[in-house]
Image 1 (tube, rainbow, N blue to C red):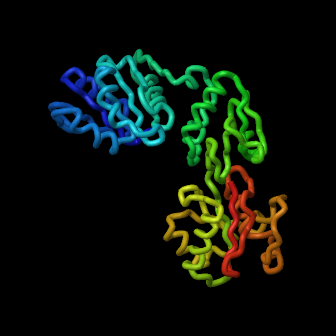
Image 2: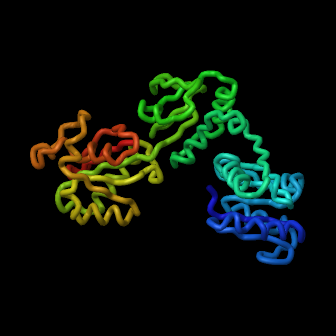
Image 3: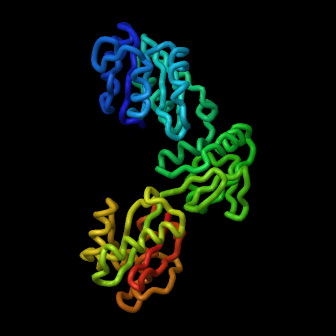
Length: 331
């Protein structure tokens, strides 16, 4: 849901409507733009470019045609444009106009419809009207990175027309999807233009990258600079973006490891530590580890990454850097 909302009015009746709307949006940061109060403007063209960049969503209490004409020059991409909702002066007709899914317009329109008396939501997005799976909404709710968004139209149309869509991903992620009608789980060697890929890898097709949990093991007194270099070398070698990293994890014996703690703090990443029993409780087959000899552990980097991950899938087996740092990744 959008956090910063601009309400744009054009005359006194629409301004009064905006004032009535404010109490229904108490949990959001809301600014009202008008000709006479709050944030005052003279011409819409003077404020719209700034509003477009500053806010997550725009509620326009204006004529629909006027809104369409005024925002047309500002349109860039559905992944970055704010959600735009048009509301009438009576506050009982609501139209999510732009960026219904990724921009949050549909979600905001639904919220207003639920809260405003006698309000009707004129949602036009086909997947919402037919209760069809919307992959971009799944990605938004789960904070997955989206690549090749232009391929989405083909996938959505296939689902709307009840045609098969292949999903190249891991079984645990596939099972977590709702509305699996017309979806088929396939291997990563079966990818084509009718495939959705959900994995931390490169693809020319519609790609969703889940958050990656990074497990780290290191020798005692390893410097934070060494850990940082190893971390980014690992990310780069697997085409993982920094924004894809969910958390860091390790063995509880490393909870006082200065270099590791400093690295996590510098990167603004949460780091969690797991006990011997937790690390050994997993039934997975892990790579051979020196931790078995020294701590009677199945491993550090791999099992800690799996425990910290959402879907418990070890995607990247551990790699050793500078003979002192081991890193693995799970989703």
